[in-house]
Length: 466
Image 1: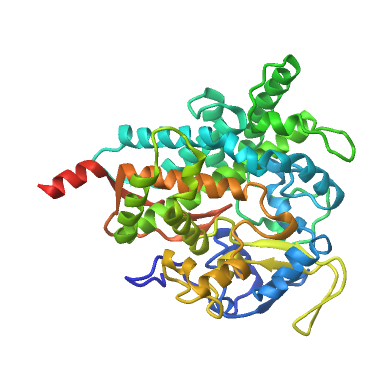
Image 2: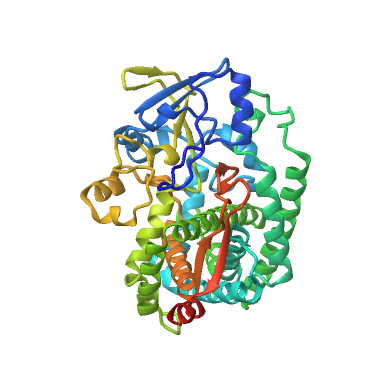
C-alpha cells in the first residue's frame, strides 16, 4: 500500500515491465494495481500485445480531441463490451454510430434540467429512508458502509425509474442479484485481449452468466408491466414512463420492450454502482478527516428543510465540493476505451486503425503534472485557480463531450443530497486497522469493504457536552 498517514489509500503500482500473461492476470484481478507508476506523470504511454496496440492518453488536449472534438471518429471499443454484453445487451453504454445516436435522442429528454426537479422528491424520500434504515440496523458493531450505500443508491434508482421503493420484492431481488454480478464480472475478459471469432464462447464465468440472465428476466417483468400500465393510461410519471413514451424525433419510433430492458440494465448499473461507490468512499474520507465532516454537518443543519425543496441544492456547496473531491480521488469508472477508425498521429506517434485509446480518469485525476497535492483529500481545492482549471480540463468522472453520462446532473443532485442527510444525522468514524484498499471490479470498490463506526450525531453531541 502506498498511502501515508496523511493521504487516503491508493493501490500499489506494478513493476514497470511484466510479461503479457502476468499483465492479463493482474488486469483481471484489479485494473488499478496492474498499471505502472509512470502513468501518473506520462502524457501518453504505449502498451503492445501480439494482437493490438493500446495507448493511454493523459494530456488534456488529446483527451479533448477524442471525447469532444471528434467523438464519432473514436467509437467505444468492443473489447470492453465483450465482458458486459451478457447483462447490458445493446444498451446505450455499448453501442456506437447511428444506433447510439438514436438511443440518446430517446433517453436524453428524461434527464433534462426540468425533470431533475420532478424526480427530486423521490431522491429525497430515498435519502430519508437511508437515514432511518441505518438508525434501525446499526448497533455498536462496525458497519460495512458499501453495502448500506448500495442499498440507498438502488432505492434511488427504483423510486425515480419505476416509482418503487427498494422494499418491493422484485426491486429487492434485482438489487441482490446486481451485487452478486458486480463481484463476479471483471472489467475485461479474455476476449478483450484476444481477437476471437464471433462464434467462439467469450469465457464468461458461469455465475456471471447466471446472474445476468436472472437480472434481465426480472427487468423484463418490470418493463412489460410498465408497458401495460402505459397502454392502460395508469402509468406513474417517472423516468421509465418518460423514456418509454418518448419517440425518436427523426424516426418516430419508441423503444421496444427488449430495447428498454437493455437501457434499464445500464441505468441500474451506472446509476446504482457508481453512486454507491462514490457515497461509500465519501463517507470513509469524511470519517478519516473529521474536520471536513463537522463542516458539512453544520452546512446540512442550516440548509436542509423538513420537506423536499429543490432550492436546497444551491445551499449545499460544501457537500458538492466534497462529493466532487471523492469523484476525483475514486472515480467510479476508472478507465474508458475508444478505438481508432483510421490512422492517427498523437504526440509524434502513428496509431494504426483499430488501435485502443485508453482514457483513465483514475490517472488523469491524480496526474502529478496537472494537480496540486494530487493524492490528497482537499475539498477546498475547487475554489483555487488550480482546481478551477483542472475542473475544466482534467476532471471527467462522467466522461465528456457527446458521450458524457446522461445521468451526470442526476448524480450531482443525488450524491450531495444523500451525503448531507446522512452526515446531519450521524457521525462516521474509521475502524482501527481496517483501511480500505481500492480495487476495480466494474467500479472502484474496496477490496474488503469499507467499515465505519456510526453514532447518532445529536447523541454524540450531548455526550460531548456532558
